[in-house]
Length: 276
Image (cartoon, rainbow, N blue to C red; front, side, top):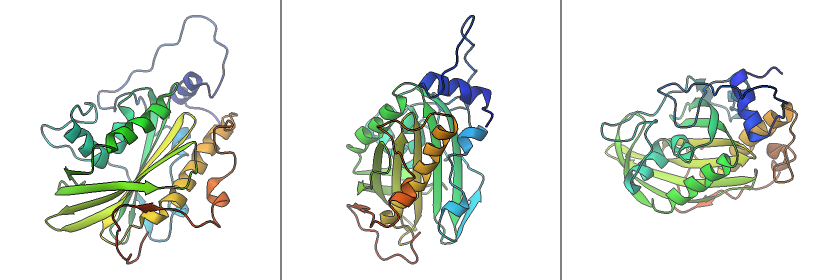
């Protein structure tokens, strides 16, 4: 598989691919003014292989072009890190992929959106980091969530909501996993779902799945994240760098298919109708 030049450079930095260099260091690829901090590319074909397809998901999902979450005047944009706890909590809910990028070290990203006939939206972002950037990204998400049990935020359509979060216990399908149950209540009712994050070495996948009350089951986060992690592992193997002893060494979706996933968290989502 031929590597895009930017992704190849990114993976050299992370130690995924070793290439001898002769002469002066190569120039760092420019970052566009609208790029999130530390994320120099979006939609690279190789990193795009880490994104879920409709075939990876239960029936009823349709892929759609990924769109950025709306911003509100006075709030951080994707190029402006949140600075106070309230803003960090809002970013955790509205744009967790941007929050993960704040510690720096990100060198490439790709995103995908999948809508379900129930009205739910599954948004995924995959990113590759230099050094220990991916580990620091997961740590930053964990640390932020510790001070964000209830806060105000907005849905993707701009609707104001009050959000409550709780821990979501995930199957360990990657080097690190992290999950939250999300419940958002507003004038027009309740929206619920989950945030699930998986890291394999220098690559990270972030899933945020939200839908009308009772349509998203957080207990199904682990198998969905497992399929996303399989794609991260596939990327590393395809580049000639099998996962290390720290990393997952066999496809997680097949390895855990016969298990009962432990997706539990504070804040029950109620009876699914149907859950996805």
